[in-house]
Amino acid sequence: MFGLIGHSTSFEDARRKAMELGYDHIAKGDLDVWCSAPPQLVEHVNITNPSGKSIEGAYIDSCFVPEMLSRFKTARRKVLNAMELAQKKGINITALGGFTSIIFENFNLLSNQQVRNTTLEWERFTTGNTHTAWVIARQLEINAPLIGIDLKQAKVAVVGATGDIGSAVCRWLSNRTGVGELLLVARQKQPLVELQKDLGGGRILSLEEALPEADAVVWVASMPRTLEINSSKLRQPCLMIDGGYPKNLDEKFSGEGLHVLKGGIVEFFHDIGWNMMALAEMEKPQRQMFACFAEAMLLEFENCHTNFSWGRNNITLEKMDFIGEASVRNGFTTLNLRSFLQAAVA
Amino acid sequence: MPTLESKDVAVLDRPDGSLGDLPDFTSDLYKDAYSRINAIVIEGEQEAHNNYVDIATLTPEKEEELVKLARMELKHMRGFTACGKNLGVKADMAFAKEFFAPLHNNFQKALSEGNLTTCLLIQAILIEAFAISAYHVYIRVADPFAKKITEGVVQDEYLHLNYGQEWLKANLDTCKEELMTANKANLPLIRSMLDQVADDASILHMDKEELMEEFMIAYQDSLTEIGLDNREIARMALAAVV
Image 1 (cartoon, rainbow over the protein chains, first blue to last red):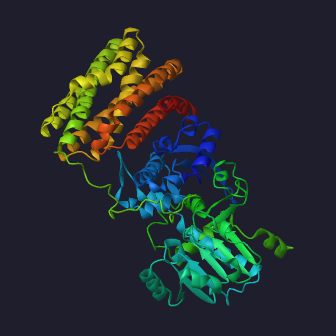
Image 2: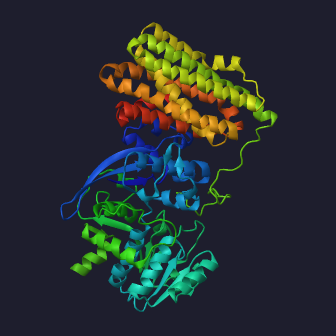
């Protein structure tokens, strides 16, 4: 059995969903009630891959909402309690979605293996970052040519280049895709220098310097809220892949020749018959989902019950190959710029 | 949606992920709060002992097992009494008696009417879940002596929770309605008991929010074990928040 740990995108959304699901006691409560609410296993689901293999899964809502980010203790409890529930339910492999893995990493929850009388078994969990990185890289490879960008000549900026997903995308782009030039953007200088050395190339730039030069931008960092960008200074065409969480790039950028694609999203080959992806504001919630969630499904389909994506900077090209092949084999495709893809097919 | 870039995001100041300092167990403020919390725990264990002995009168065939459970509660009581002595604190037993009075009265009423389901819900589910959750939170911030005692107690309390669950599970068909009614009458008491001790608990570094969450987890787990579905549990839990 695979598991997905997710949460709503806002408190308001969470209350509405809870009401729909019949969890009135939580739905009617204020934020303090939500802070005290236990995680809920809200949905069981069965999915079948193209070769007819069926697996069973469960969706756990941690009852975390982004409004709790300012409450360190609450946020960490939400994540640990949801993980404990997943383990107690006997789920083999569970993906940590949305803010779950970010909180786990940033708040150093690795030192909290004991939750009440449960010792968390890390091998039952995955951040899903390997699949996310592979999907983002593929989204760039597939969609850039559709809008007239030749990646062999193009400058590709990776914003958040030193993070777990960012560094994996950089490695893939420089070793497999072969882009014109990689522009490396991140907040801290030292890890950038190390990444550059590791990659054997790439140019370190500030965000302001990188954007006007880039033909494509891969965002895997949270977008600074205060960031103001003059879209007229961007290149045309320009492909923006929004691989961060939350996905809010389209609020910042618009303009002719500017294409924003939600990054790290995959589509399954048939409807799944679940309710939960409507929460995540997917365009086609019956088929589309975060690549990190899909990673748990892939690991279950492939009987690969390990914490496949875990810790920082452990994503190798070989692991990306493995999960990428599994992704295709089990009926997933990456989310693409739809209108362009249809035109190209026509 | 807030993002990690927002100004109002918590900053982790302890790289080891720990929650911070333990309280000063020697301060007057701590000892004053502890005199009430410690008393509640001692009284709770005494109540539990008496309740299991009483429940045995409703199910004579289970007497041996129940008396064994009751004896364990007395052992816990002695352990927690030692915790207070260790800190030089005199437990405020008068406060604790009053604290338990509403729940005590409900139990006695159910007992006199022979309502085993209600008795089990109050003692073996509500009080045990309340105890387990409070002990889990306490263990994280207790002095070393009390921590060791409490860790031992928690393991026993799970057995007691389990006892109530097993009976209710086996008899769910016939006792569901009474269970719902008893929940409606008694869960709000747990909530108000929690409210009453919130200030003292926070001096012991036990957050009300965390206590409530731990209780809801233990309670929800227990109801799931008994065989209720998510919606039924949601309906029952509603009694705690409204």
